[in-house]
Length: 114
Image (cartoon, rainbow, N blue to C red; front, side, top):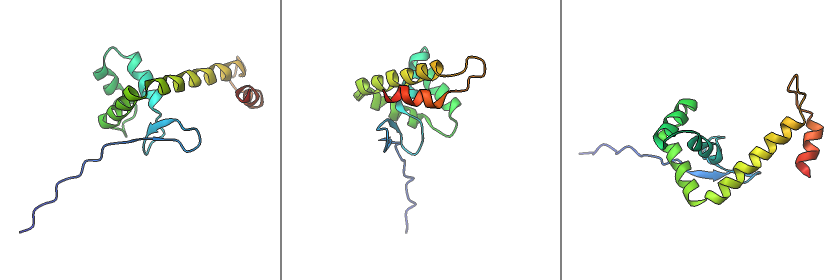
């Protein structure tokens, strides 16, 4: 008699973007630093997890948990990623038209390269 197969559970992994090296949830474009920013914004880990799944309905709590565990082991690296993202946002705002919000991509490119 054949036994039914047990369902396989895939634990989402964290991989690095091939060009930037930024850690992200495998199979997505969601960087780990984005999950961490959400954790810091909420009052509890459960609230952060619920908000994450609400904001990204194609992801599961397991995706959130994988990113959180990765952060715990690599917090210095992820904090650096957050700082770099904030630096880029600041530069983008500096090089955008205050009324339209359109970014001067040439000026921004020069600023990011320096």
